[in-house]
Structures are given as structure tokens and as C-alpha cells.
Length: 468
Image (cartoon, rainbow, N blue to C red; front, side, top):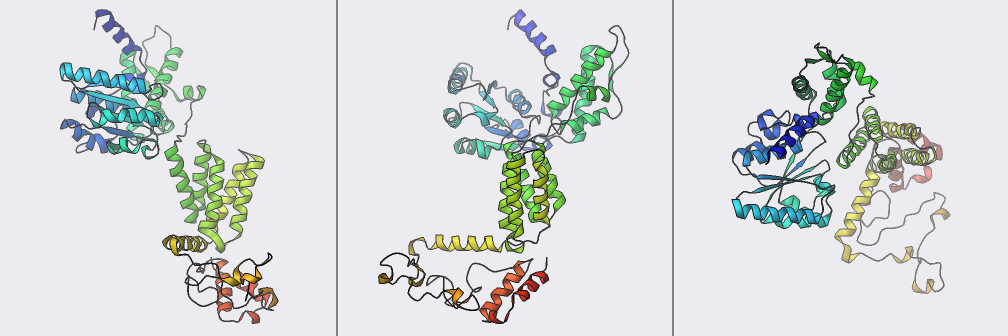
């Protein structure tokens, strides 16, 4: 490196964002991620044993993925080559691999190829990288905020160790930004401190994102320096009022991974009859910019999968909320979604209609090559010549019977018991929850042949007695 290059590098280092200037140089300086870099942690163990293999670091923004990759290069003395999947293409990958081969041949020095935002590499770009990882020409380290099981090709994922970084805790963020205030004081040559409670407020805003926390500290320091006289040597104080004036507020993180996790939490809260949790996860999804139509679809599904005949009105309300979303739009339609979520969460639960479907599908799948034909009496008899084929022969029209029901078999031979009475089949078994209890009672009466002595008001009373 020439004298001018060295001077330029020093200038860039001084002008770099605070987050870059605060980047740790070794594992002991890392704040957070103790499950990876603490004593016995897998990442520390690989580096200290000099057995670093290809790794995919997966976690929220600002959790140190790039930092860990750069530290790895220092521990192993390998050349560190960084590519951004946002701007790099197949040509860049091949050029990096050619340089790595030349470096290995000339000096015996290996290469760490770090690909930031690796989830943005398409299949062709990931396929271009795979051979160099397979032959060990490069140690690949990928960083991603998205679930790699969704975004990274299977062969590349299988050849890498998957390590998950976690959002920093509030105490860890406070530790980090306390160091940052001291660094700013050192760099500016002027004492600096934070007003009472400001560091904790920044930690709350950051939401576990170290980079965001450091950016806020740097902004507050700049504002405090601007307020103070240039010739003053008094302490610069980071103030909460500057945060309000700058319009700094918490930004909720929402990735594809967290999208599915929060949607799962919403539906499990509905299934678990917790309306508070259901509304909380609904608000989190919408507040983070999630697709409200996806939420509406999930609620419609839950109405049948988790509630079913225990409360048939759940489906109507979920569908109405989905339609209201299209009619009204956000933010007002959030009220409709919240009403649906609360109704579904507080409704009695039954998955028996869903279980009946799954059981029927399983039976059909297991007997795919030997499905019995439709019984003759159930076949379509409305076209000319159907009667000559025997279609419909023996079918009894239930409405001709005063009970509205006749003893007649509707399943094909070989599926379920030979009985023709309802409620004894292999698929639908009513629960004792909500209105499904009345359905079960009606089917029991049908099996006993006693439906003719049950008046409509008696069935209404049965529904009224149905338990939660």
C-alpha cells in the first residue's frame, strides 16, 4: 500500500459511520451472540480450532453477521473478499473464484468469500458459487435476514453450517451504545454523555438492532454538537428532546421469516382461545407492513379448520371481514379483522370437520389404485339411457319420507362399516363443543331411528344446551 493509499484509508476510517468504527476486532469484543461466540459456542470453536467451514449466518438486521465474517478472516489469516448479492452477478462470483485460485497457488493463502444478502442471489448465481464451495477453493460465509430454507438452494445450504444470530437484548444494546458515546467523545476531542434514561430509550427504539442503535447515537451526538458553541469545552449531552425533534421512532422489523412466524402465532392464539394474543399478533403484522389479505385468508381458513361446526357463524364472520377489507381498506378494515380474530378466538373449538376431510384424503391416498366405483343407486340418472344402465335404481328420495331421512347407504362398498345409518362412518366424529354437540345428538337420534319423534323446537333446545 502506498503512502497516499494509507492516508486515504485513515481518512475513510475517521469518516466512516459510527457503526463501522465500532466494529469489533475480535470475538471478545462482540456484544451479544454469546450462544455463538461465548465459551464453547460453535463459531468460536471453529475459529479457535482453525476449522472454519462454509457458514450461513441468519438473523435480523444489525445482529453482527458481517462483523462475525470479518472477525473470521482475522482469526484464520485468510483473505477476506466481500460481495453484495444486491450488485454482484455470476461474473463477479467467477472472478472472485479465479482470484482465490491464483492467491492459493502463489502464496498458499486461502480465501473467505463473504456474500451479504445472499438471499438475493438467484438460482443461477447460487449454482455458479456451488462448485467453488464444493472443492474447498473458498470458505463461503453468507449473511441473510431471510429464512435460508426458503431462499438458499438446497445443495448450497447442505454444504454450509447454519448459525442463527439473535436480536440483541436491551441490556446488550445499552452496553454497546455506552461504548459508542465514549468513542464519539474520543473522536471529537470533547466530553460526551447521555441524559438520564436516553440510552434505555435508544435501546427500546432499536429493537435489538445494533446498527440502528449506533446510528441514533451518532445522530443525537451530531445534534448536541450543533447546539453547543464551537469553542466550548463543556460536556456534550445526548438528549431525548433531540430524538423527538428528529422524528426518531421504532421501526418494526418484518421479514418473510417473521411474516410466517407471526402469522403462525396469530392462528395458534386463535386456536388456543386467547383473544388478547390474537389481537396483539394481528396488530404486529399490520403495524409491520404485513399483507392484511394474507391475514384475512388465514382467519377464513382457521374458521373451518379450528372452529368448524362448533360455531358455524365463525366462517361467516371471517369471510365478512375479508370482504370488508376489500371494500374499506386499511387502516379502518383493521377493525373488521380484529372483530373476526376476537370472535374466532372466543368461539368454541372443533377440528372435526377438518379431521374428517384429512381422514378421507388419507384413505383415498392409501387406496389410490383401488377406489370402488360410485354405487349404482347414487349415479347420475338425468340423461337419456341412464336408466337402461341401472343408474339411480334403488335410490330413495329422503324428502318423500316424513322424517326427511331414510336408511340408505351413501359410501361405496369397502369404505367404512356396512351400516347405512349416519354418524357411524370412518371420517366425521362430532365433538361435544358448542353447536356441534347438537349435531352429534341429531346423528345419534338418526342412528336410533328416533328422529321422527323429535320436533324442531327440541333440536333448537339441544343447540341452546350445547357446551362451550
